[in-house]
Length: 336
Image (spheres, one colour):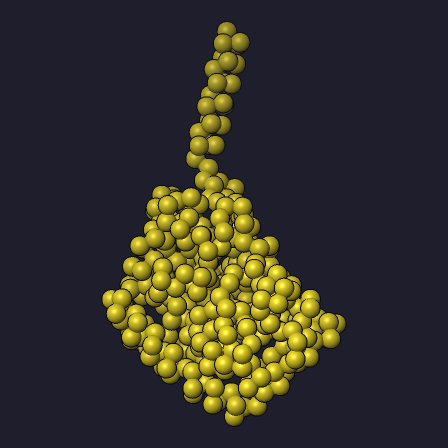
């Protein structure tokens, strides 16, 4: 009799175990490169979600093992993975609404402001609908400071020095470089170091963390301290069907962790990444190039307005409320 009851108890325990396993939720997350300042909010949200759900909901982060960075939005659309990071400028035609954040010389002056402006735009119905075409829901941005340029060869001591220079630059930053007579070249971050070493490009525009992560400083001779032409917008998105399939508790664990993950990211970038940047430039003997205010003001006047107007016209033709989106971004930056 005891053996009979013991057998029933063991069977019940096994069944309960299988039910528990079946109820556990695992998401695959497609990133690229390696863990760095750019991915710390994804690392943090994975940690928070696991803690809040006692391990019943986990995010499995993959750095390049699921898709190439230019294919992450496509992977989200077909459900190949549940979460991914990508940059709008990698495929502007697929996500035109958020490329407004990549216009040159918008005037964003901090990571905190970049988060605020991005989140406001992400909630606009036209932006939600734009990403819904890919079965994607915008979760959070990957805020980055203004880009600047690291290069090889003779330093451009004046803005005229960029004339004819091949520079890795995407989106609005590319427009700014073109206005200087440079030849903007679009490529993914992982392709830049080899292109610089081989002479395909002479310089690259990145935020400091990426210059460090992708090795552009290894053979560089100079760095622009205050060109500040703009930045790129690289959101983290989730597959909408997967988000809808979460339990209420799991969804709250994910969405309720966004603010904390972003705060962690910003603090890490400001306190750790930027603290390393200056000493690294000194160690490598990289010359700092600073341009005068009048030259930069002339460049901004020459580039910003025409680039914005072109973006508005092109995206209004796509059926987007382009002027409204642009005005939202500008007013968010100015605080009006």
